[in-house]
Amino acid sequence: VPADAETLELAKKQLDKTPNGLYTHKIDKISNQVESYQVSLIEDSKFVARPVGVASFAGEKIVQVAYPMRHEKVQSMSTILGDNSLLLKYINPHMAVVVTMVMDEDGQSETKLATALEKANKKPRKPAGAGTPEDTPDTSKSAHALPNMFVNLVDTVSGRVLHRTSHSNVDETKDVSVIVTENWVIYTFVNAKSRRTEIGVLTLHEGMIDSKGLTFFSRPEQTTTFSSFDARESKPVVLAKTYAFPKQVTALGVTSTRQGISSQNILMASADGALNTFHKILFETRRPVGEVKPDEKKEGLAPYRELIPGSPLFSLTYNRTLEPFTHIVTAETSLESQSLVLGFGGPDLFFIRTSPTKGFDLLPETFNKFLVGAATVGIVIALLTVQRMGNRKALQQSWL
Picture 1 (cartoon, rainbow, N blue to C red):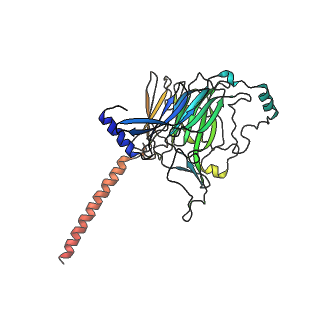
Picture 2: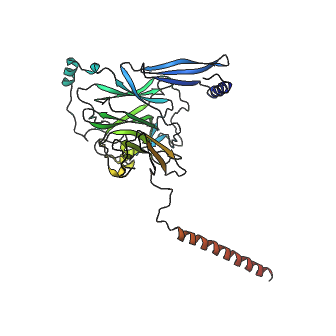
Picture 3: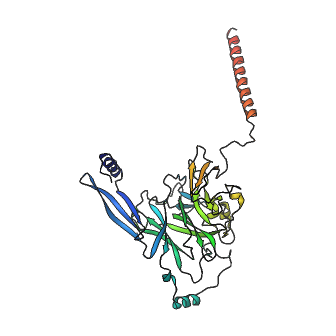
């Protein structure tokens, strides 16, 4: 903290506003760990950062870090399911997504004993589309490949790893894109074996409230406080799905609106220079494998299909030839249905306005403004005429 009086005064005010303490963290890409600190004031003019926790990733290197969007507006803290039950969203503003890669490739080789045990316990694979809704086919992993990429959800206040998932055969020479929106974590990577881009999706939840669990006479026990140091309350329930995309993804983004009422669209910049937009429900982790149940149809869930189509109908750049974007920034407008999108990172800049839920608060182009205006003027003239006639009649009756 700079030693000037103005900065010290601002830091003191910030400490006074946070009765639970002011916390910060450091991403150390040399030692590959996340260090958490608590900032406190001593001697009225000196600040000290005390270590609180550390998340160490030994044998791995940090390749990407992503944080939740600070000014994102969340309209609802739960998702209404088809049977009217509530799936509570897990939203932790202190969470960071840390993607790590294994540094030592020799450590990935399997022993003969492990291979023999795996063959002995190997079960026949089910065909794609068959199985229970809880099963998720993962064709990205080889039968004998060990993971070389890990996606870690880290609480930057306590320094604890909340969740950790892994992937195999990841091409380390290709960039990994990550975005965090509401209770969703979306990341992309290139599978070196299948030579395709894969999209990992994680949705975080606190739990579920039954359709009859929230009534006028009964309410579930819910706490209004949240602590990163409570191991039971701070860990989320994670649902996961993996999808495939026919093009290499260079950047990820998500649309943002004024009040967060419109549904979000996922933005993907591909290596061919296109900027694609997809409805968020395509990446839903609860898409069933097999037949869709009636309650799932009410939510608009479709059967799980691994491939996300790269149709030109989803492209915001249309037929324009552009260099691939490495960053996507979105901003809200004064209209809830509209979102501004800016793609940059190369020699080209691309700016467009998009409508995630179409223009529900806009008048269509075929709207007859002249007819409405003429009708409004006619109604006003008729009201004034009737009012004048009423006043004249009342005046005549008063003289009788």
